[in-house]
Length: 360
Image (cartoon, rainbow, N blue to C red; front, side, top):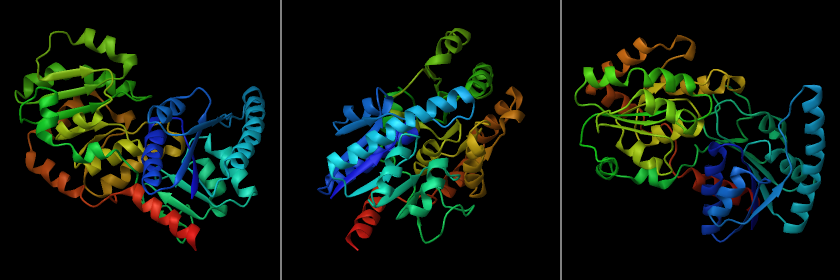
């Protein structure tokens, strides 16, 4: 079987594609990945030594200038999609999100190639909603509690995450940061749109250290804000690690007892699968408010606290962090509540569903 997987844009779309692709390859299938030209996904796919082709694509915008650009790029992308499907002789297509998937999925549907869709968030994106009726199966990172799709077409597979995140031992993770076995807070402020988290948390670090002598902090800021934050917080205790980016994010998640984070689908899946509860502050401008709805689902399970960004203040964040870290019994309950929320081996579930549909 030869599978084409199209997806890209952010890391939340890219890394699951890598996991899915490697699962098909492990089971003896051929895989072609499709991303945008000169993009992050192209670089990452090739870094993993995965066969990759590129097509033109653009986000749908409705202003006159941007819409004409979209039409131009989309028409090129669809032509390139047809050529890719023809030249590669594809048996099935998985649209894995990001606007690069739309031309490929459209072309596959018109050529009667079986199409599968993968949706990371609890609120599906435009492309997946558009092509849902023509797809064989829709793999859901979160359960479809809002009823966007026909129940017969959906499969709650969860989001594929890197095995290292699940398998890392806390002792090894703490050693990576030269930390002791003490309460450890992970703050993920580094993704786009997280400046409010970065600014708020950077202003309370010293107060947290003064209030709690045992706390250890891993603060991943992102490249954009790193210099300003470190300038503001000079000569801190070795119990605080402020870093702009961490490729080996499994060490940060593996060391943490508690987290402060946005509500991207992959981040929430990684934290939950690892049993790390936290304070979640959804990005308020996410399309269809999907981050808040991702977080509300986990809040209903009792494993996170949710703060809307419009309500966020230094005092609120400081007091909540101190409250949780000084009540380990509550953190333990929240941690226990993470169990079983998301399926394990998501990529294997997807593989089996695709194989079953194709072999029917």
